[in-house]
Amino acid sequence: MVAIPMSSAVPPEIAVAAVPDDDRVWVPQAPNVWFRPLMFNTVTGQWCNLLKVTAAGIVSRHRHPGVVFGYVLKGRWQYHEHDWVAEAGHFVYEPPGEIHTLEVPPDCPEMVTFFNITGAMAYVDEHGEQIGYEDTFTKIDMCRAHYARNGLGADYADQFVR
Image (cartoon, rainbow, N blue to C red; front, side, top):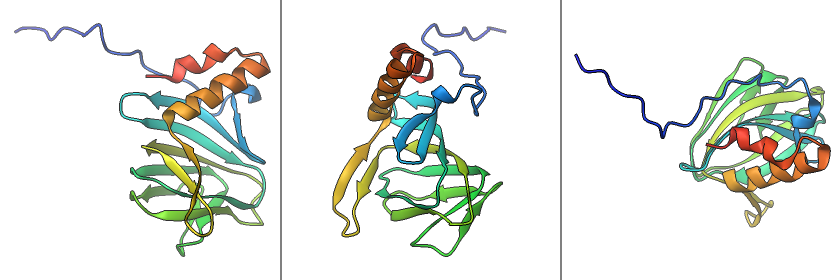
């Protein structure tokens, strides 16, 4: 029997508490909206994070060219374009290509959802015109800038990059 050797090119695992003890790990994304990075895949363009929203209302209208998976940890949210509500304990699958408007309902003081996103997010206005863009690389840059400002150091983000 021949043992299969471990490649030296395999990146290290990531094993971190998803909800951090240090609030400085949460990166501001918009008013009352933060994300907690968990992994940035620079080869496939995938990223995993927690999204935290602490106020009711529309978070964003956006389109993904790739698939998105979500798992709601706390609170609830919905898309204007659908009649379902994603609540704590719910799994969400989003097919690529759809434009949807994420909203946290008025009676929900905080929402936290794990998202696994492949590709990018194109933010659009009510007419479908692009007004913003995020991908794994812009998210890494946001993290590095935030951590440089808050004392964790820009290289704190590197632990999530693969």
